[in-house]
Length: 274
Image 1 (cartoon, rainbow, N blue to C red):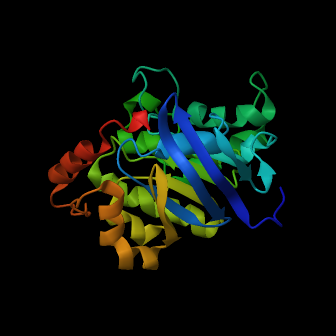
Image 2 (cartoon, rainbow, N blue to C red):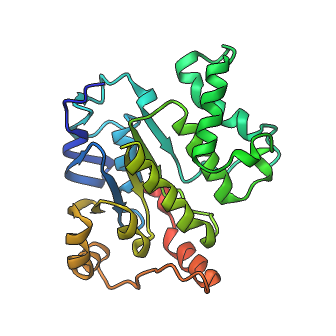
């Protein structure tokens, strides 16, 4: 790992299109190591597409992307990059795997699919589960957990390989509102205590600035990138510019969980088309 490079991610003038439809235009974004970036934008704004480009899953039409100073096309230390998608907990609830087994799958990239776990590996799995507060569910079937608990398990699976960078694509979709604040607090702890670089794609505008260090606002082009204090000062203008109209800011009011969940469902729409 080249710690001399101060950026975890460097996106240089990246553009991407699906056929004739331009999704990203000249994106320039540098994310310092140790930062906690909130990436926000309306449905279809290109957020998930940008993440796929960063992960090397899509090849930009133009521009370059670097991870820890190395071109993404040559990057081979993928165990240092964790990813949790918004669909991580969308699987058959009868899937016969315990929390321990699901998290241990995160080690296969390092040790090989058919290798047996050593005591050291097992301790690592348990430690990752402990970090997300799920140690009491170690032997429980993953399908028996709530959406919020499942997402914690999938974060543990990403953490078990000791990533330097963790990318989460709308991880609170389908998670009950009461769990969301604890979820963000857990992410902030990982950022502060492990100096882990986090990129969180989210619609949850009202909760963002309390936990993150930086904000990027995307809608085909990059409308804003800066610190949370600067974003709060420009928030109304940024949101109007990015969404094309005023939107009601979602706040965490746990006395009105139903309303919060309803707003979240309305916002998430067709994010998978990004």
